[in-house]
Image (cartoon, rainbow, N blue to C red; front, side, top):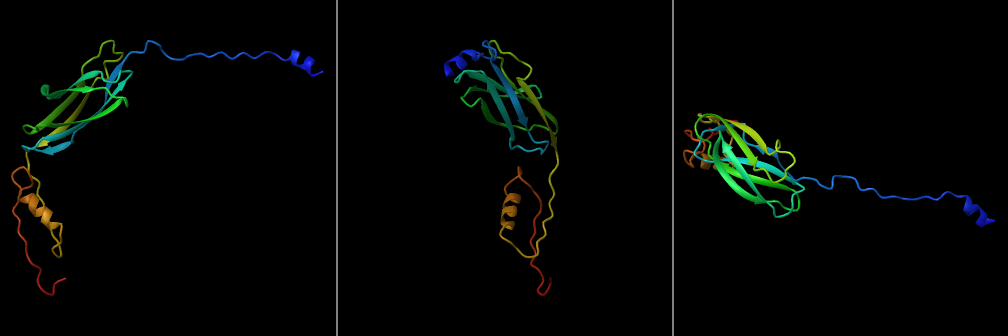
Length: 173
C-alpha cells in the first residue's frame, strides 16, 4: 500500500547556518587617489580626486579626511559615511614650486577599526617651471580658433604666447 511505502522513506532535516563574523569590525579605506602626473607651475590650484570606501560603518558616522602635500597640511575635512559605502572627494590644492610633489590622503582611524594599513594612499605630480608652446596652423579661419585666442589672452595662468593671424593668399590651396 501507499502508506507502507512512506514509512520506508528517510526523513530529511534542513538546518540553517549563518556564515560570517558576527563581530565584524569597521574598515574605512582610501580606494584611489589621483593627481596629474605632470603639471605646469601656475597660481591656479591642482585638482586632486579621491575615492573612499566605508565597510561595516554605520550611516552618518563622521570621518576625518586629511590631504597633505609633501607632509604639509593642505586641507582637513569631515565627511559622513553614507548608505552606499563609497564616496568621491575632490580637493583644490596649490602646486607650489617646481619639482616633485607628493600628495597624501589619509582617513583618521575609527574605534575598533580592523585594518589601518589601507587608510592612506599617495600620488605624485611633477611640477614643471615651463610654458607650453603651441604652433596652430589652419587653412582657413574656423570657429574654434576663437577659443584658442581667448585662452592665450586670458592671463598669466593660462597659455601665453605671441599670437598672429595671417590671411591666406588668394588662389593658394
